[in-house]
Image 1: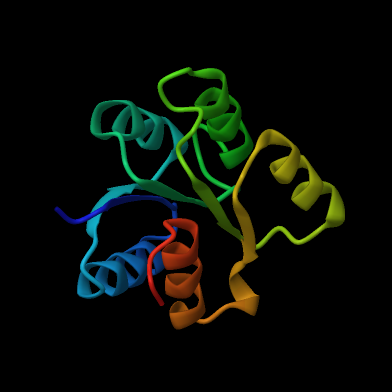
Image 2 (image 1 turned 45 degrees about the vertical axis):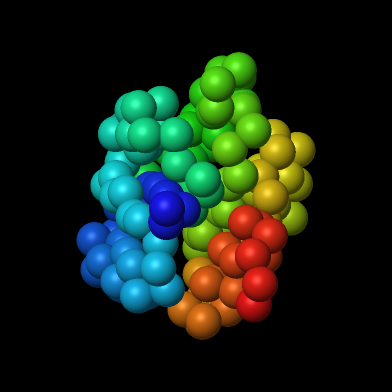
Length: 125
């Protein structure tokens, strides 16, 4: 069965591009345009990995992370942050909460993001 990836990203074009790349790589994809919907999907669908933006409406990525990590059923979900925030404070804050990988959107290609997904899921490259 295909591993499920939840994309929580408010930029519709980027979300669509990520979803298409993940689907073509054989993953099941769930999508949310804000943090609140993302948390609801995480609870109900139990994804194998979450790709999370930090700057979003309703609930931002830091709020989503705090709720994920506080919930015994979701605290171990692997999370890759994919954001435009690149300050040391933001990176430290996210890593302290427990994200697996922190990627700045502008610094990574789609292929590199897919490689990080495979690496986080401990799959063959």
